[in-house]
Image (cartoon, rainbow, N blue to C red; front, side, top):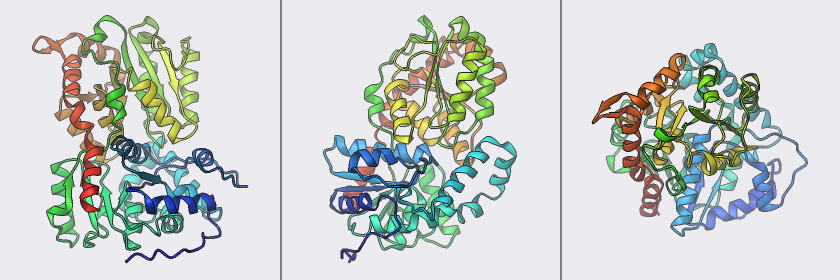
Length: 442
């Protein structure tokens, strides 16, 4: 039986009153959700009215872990279920805040440095097992979830592992078609259930569990699909698979939560500049929360004499989207980019790839960030929805995929859009499937 006695808020937590209120919300709702992705302090101030004397910037580690958690929030709202989502990073104490800043700083450095990326790949598992982030979020996560008795949906293995150590029942979402050993730290704990994207990931999870010394009953591993925000499907206004033949091709160029693929994106824009100026291609440049990406985009526009349009001007050749925090950045994509784009040029990340399909878009993929993104690229290429971007020959590549018939007298891009439309509804069911699984566990 969970200890539900009232205990004081740990003295050094940031937003201590808010933490106390969220603690009570989590224990009363139908669906408690925990992720580790970013801070959104202004959103908490708006919601709970508490201000602190500390001046600390918001941090972002991952858009995927936020957007997938928020997809569950949207699905719960649609299903008229009570819910609450927290990210314990918001409550990290002042004394532990340097650990958070160090984690973000190192992540962004690695994202922008090929040499550091190679070093990170060599040491990936060891580094992940020693992240200072884990120690920083342990106390706030333990406090805020302390009275929860229902199964908690976890969107990050760090959160899931801490919750299991605290005796909680956890539905752990594996947020890529890839299984890290950290998802199996507590694999023998029968309070742990996993939600995975596909059958291949399910088989790999059971296999890796056995290798690591755990015999996992297959009934504890459920194929749900990716948690994609249901609003993407309903907001999609660009549904014609041949619209690009009668107007400029609409491309969204996007980065991730840490600001990956910066060099590739800069080269890509330079090589696309003539097509943008001629009016053959329109660009939505998404910088997430990253000022250096926003600066790169504005500098590109100035150097090439391209006017930057207003966010709501769907006829503009070049627009820039950036949020002050992960919440705002995510809504910019949903409000302006997904409903408009024909295709996305992005690394093949779990959030962006599956969301692009839900929006009925094709994908040109940039260099993947790791093995998990290589898996995603294999999945989307197998679906016939993505190919790899040829950055140095991007104009010729776009001409080829929009004009050269490859099947049924249709070019690749038209076929890819038809396939994306076909898969959009099924891809959009993941969040609902996870909530159905949660109800069975409750």
